[in-house]
Length: 164
Ligand code: MG
Image (cartoon, rainbow, N blue to C red; front, side, top):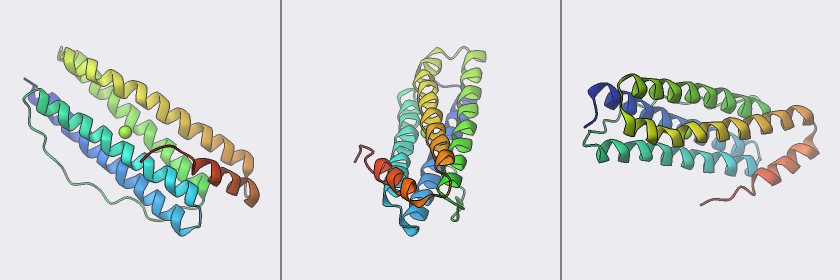
């Protein structure tokens, strides 16, 4: 059985993962509106991945005999300044999520909740990947600057992200 403390923290994380999905979907909509379909596809798929993160936690709470309780999801921003701004915000967001996952892990350690620690290993590794991919794209967009042809090349490449 899950402790109330852990259950509350996991439910909070479900909300954060759904907010992530919402944020990426807002970024996808912005990309569509600015004629960058490859960026839009990448962000849309990222949003879907975030829903699967939320569902992993949802299923885990149920598996442990707890109760998943869904909180209100904040409204994401609608406007962004540029493709670089999109990915800088994505990276900043992922760093915040990493901090939350680490805090959850710390709580699971302090309360001797071993199954939750093991479950969170997946999330800890996933965050390394999330930060890595966002920071690589940020670095590339910085190299590219305001030059349209390389931005369109990146749009093409990001549009090849596998999924769906
Ligand atoms: Mg996530």
